Length: 234
Image (cartoon, rainbow, N blue to C red; front, side):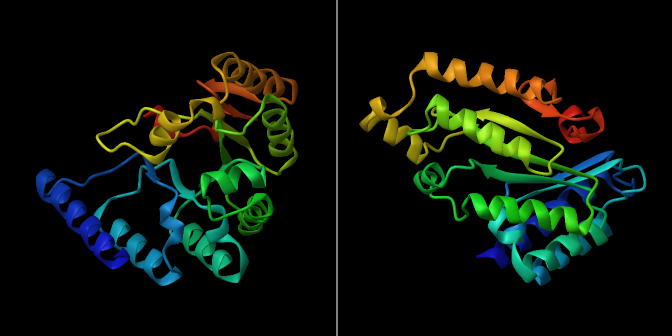
């Protein structure tokens, strides 16, 4: 299945190259996203990056971000993937931690735990990327105000350059309805109340500012403006 997905990506890149004709496509920022790129094997990841760089001119690119799933970049294999990313010009990692509470992560059915997030942060720093940001979700079933406050404090204690705080989206963006919507319909009482969600949001702002993080875009906090997503800005 992964081989098929990669093949489709190659085709899509060629479609855009053909659409622009002989003109170089010169992105000023790049984001390889979804969290899933690092689920590829090192060899598959290298093939994807070779294919990408052969089709686009990155001479004017000022930031190259890759999203990562924490457990997939732990250990020796994870370190190999990170080195490949850095060798191909990636300078910013967006880490999909989502929570630093094992109970919440288990409910989310995430493949990683809180220790994996901390280990992934160390791996990213070991390889030497310029920027590292963490994604966190608030408003998930079982996430109390106290648990959220604890998560924020744990996140700030990690060696990261900032984080993006997401409110759980129950209504989907696209056509596909996810499991969260079904869970809400079956047991809405297990979800935090609206007042609690607003409090979590304001706690995110208050705790971040108190620890030297500045809000650049909505609920994206970094220590310095250079760490924000230029792809988002563009």
